[in-house]
Length: 109
Image (spheres, one colour):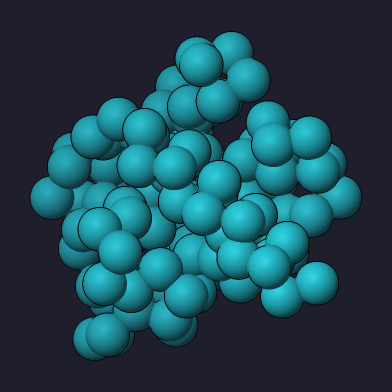
């Protein structure tokens, strides 16, 4: 089981590294792309453990565009600051113009 989890996390990281600058995707979209549609929470766990792996975890949000993973970033608003540095507008933890910025790996890869 441990080895399967690590392999899944590595696949999640590989997809997350492809998210373009200034775009966002969801935990569920990555899970679905990897053939594990009901594993959005596992994608979240992977993002939580991605520190030091050069993974743009700040570009992965929930299906409604909310910054639900922000408490896993150092600093109060680091996730939001990273997104805003890429031109993504965030108001009250919500990505603005989410549909236009959404990057779906199933469509893009």
